[in-house]
Image (cartoon, rainbow, N blue to C red; front, side, top):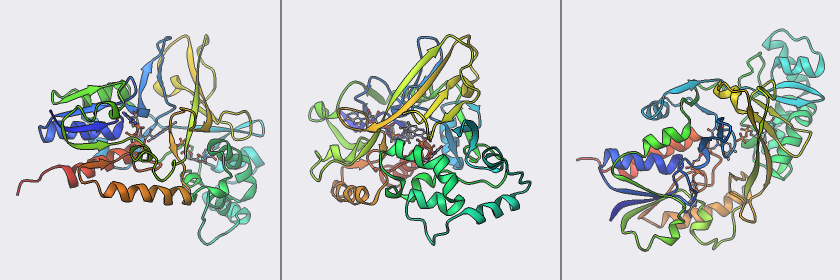
Length: 370
Ligand code: FAD
Ligand code: UDP
């Protein structure tokens, strides 16, 4: 007999489980079809003893002090700024585009943010409001920088031309006029000191929480008595695809351990115009782990078909309209809460998922004493 059945042990499900168990003293069963907790943020020490992220690089960053404080109850942090280089025209250049990107690509010797902005103003293709991922870039930095750094990467990553993709996708990447080469400028950045999985273990260690892995919730839902359901899986699957399948993008991860101390000069190198993979991450750069060997991960984007995992909702108008149909169905179900990247069909970062789960817990689940 459980008060709550939670589907999915990723960030969304784990935050709910932790809050309900510790704040409401109610019993929770959290179920995941995978053989581990942590959802897509799961990390582990591989056969060579290197800490890697199974489902691609997860760099934590937030401006939300509440989210950072909440998670800090379950982990210390390895403070760390994420930096990325892009391999363009045979050279490694900073992405987000900044003063040094222009210097390396064009030999421009611009000195101040005002001079850099003047350059962008000269090359940009102005539009009133960018409506897609091509316009959001060309309207800031023009066609050549778009072609060199964004066009090929976006096409590879999403399998559709950037013109068909919402502006918010490429709009995630800022354009800089200074020399700041951090990928994110958020106030709180880093990674859980002992890894994400260790943090999740602590979140879920409350005696009111039971965990069931390698279990599709559909196989147990009729046998487990519960008062409320929290669902963090794909929303279209919950409704048996009655309006059709929502498109998702998947990835194949190629993890490789090499018998050398270092493979590449930087933690992450993006390949917009070469190879079938989008990026290569070398984990030790981020964790500062010491070892004679190193592990790298290459990411190959592909459609989420034929049993491939659903990693990315595809932000696009048609898809949003289809999602709205499912959302209307979801709104009719009083005893089910839908939350998370797959249930909300939104390209959320980890901190956004934590913030949303905490807010729903406060507004809809926590019974406030009168
Ligand atoms: P998930 O982590 O997907 O968890 C959902 C869980 O539900 C899964 O474990 C799944 O197995 C389970 N489930 C689904 N259906 C069923 C079922 N029928 N029965 C039982 N269990 C089920 N965010 C950042 O902030 N920074 C980053 O650098 C970053 N990098 C990313 C890189 C990649 C490649 C990807 C894919 C995502 C990245 N993210 C990043 C986003 C981050 O992964 C998500 O915001 C976050 O993990 C979402 O958590 P969630 O709990 O909503 O979903
Ligand atoms: N992007 C790009 N070139 C890059 C990095 C990003 O074109 O070198 C675009 C691409 O469309 C990508 C989006 O910006 O999908 C968001 O990038 P981000 O690094 O945030 O992707 P994620 O880590 O979520 O996969």
